[in-house]
Picture (cartoon, rainbow, N blue to C red):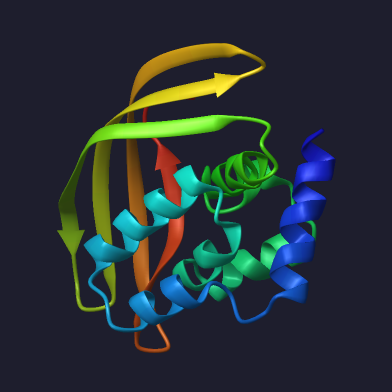
Length: 155
C-alpha cells in the first residue's frame, strides 16, 4: 500500500513540475509561518501538488529518487504519504486548534513548533489525538521552504 501511494507521489512530483499554482505563488512571497500554515492546509486537503513548492528541492529529489519515506526530512516523507492517501480518498484528516510558535530564527533558517488536535478517519474508524511537530525551514532561491518535519508526539 505504501509503495503504491509513494508511486503516486512520485508521479505527481515528476510529471507536474509546476507544482500547485496557489502554493507556488504564496511561497514566493511568504513568511516561514505562512509556508507552514499553507503546508498543513494542503496536507488536510490532499493537495500534494501545492505542497511541492513549499518543500526543499532536496526533499523533492529524495522522493523522485525513491528514498524510503521514513528517511525523508524526518517525518516529512511520511506526511507526504498521508497527503497522497488523502488525495486518493483512503483517509481524511482534520486538524483544529492549530498554534504556531517560532522557536528559533536566523537569516537563513527558522524552526517553528506547531500544536494541534487531529482527527483521522480511515476504514470507517475515527481516532482523535493531540499532535505537535517541529518544522525546520530554510531560505532556498530567496523563498522559505520546509527542509525537515519532526513529529514530536510519535517515536
